Length: 204
Image 1 (cartoon, rainbow, N blue to C red):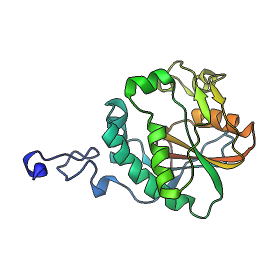
Image 2: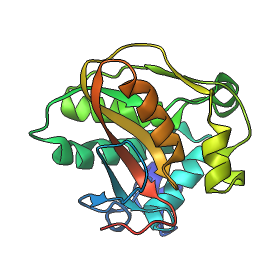
Image 3: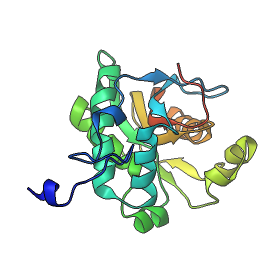
Image 4: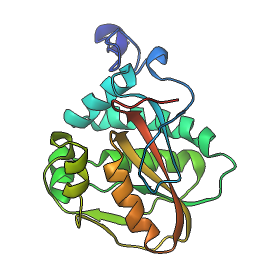
């Protein structure tokens, strides 16, 4: 009834749809992301940043749309659960956001994604990383991104075994690499990165 009176639009393609995302904008399967010079064991994503799901992700992130964030997160959790099947992972760790950004947005998108992945896999979420505020990564080149993160990300807990690191978007891999180095400095044996989108990267 309410949908007939106030029809919604898919956040990915903009077409009228009963829900926040249509089937065409929720791709099935995962893709490997090549990241050179990182200590990550591997990286996987669902789609490219310019794809409809990436559009929905941007709306959730920059419009502080918590409901849409959880809609994207549920699809992420289900699809990535298949990719993790058979693996021996100890925990899911969301990429950290400075507390100022979390307050401004009202939520942490990596934390939302990690929570939905946990529901699909049964793996616990561990908030084992902390980040200090600094210049936004999106404004910097590759070298600037790596330099910008020095000393800003710190491990706050030791997680033995293999860890799943979750972030919303991967661009150069600088943030994921900094997170992985902190985790590997304790008792973590390997770190895999999972994201919704890959920006300006070839996926296979």
